[in-house]
Length: 133
Image 1 (cartoon, rainbow, N blue to C red):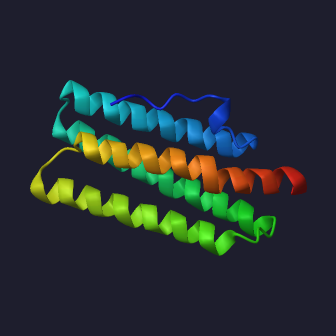
Image 2: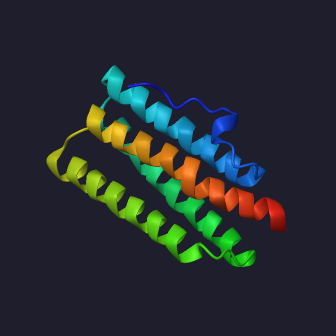
């Protein structure tokens, strides 16, 4: 599995959102490397928990900005956030209850969702915020 490389194509041109996205990609890459290296399940569980917690915080951060600047796409964007959180928490529960670690398919799901979300939904938000901030 390849790392997510942060570059200008992932930038939404809003520094505080880009900072969050950099942190999320760093955590994803740490998780990816830990799974590949065969690190302990406990360590991988802790990384996944941190990734989920940071993702939830980041989503609330974006939602606060959307509310502050009256973003018309708020409900759809928030629904997309909720769908990801539900999916990732379900994966986490599966790993914890069955004492498993994420598979390459699980990591691909997380990588694709994160990059697609940034490149589509978050780019739209970034364009909007650039015009109102």
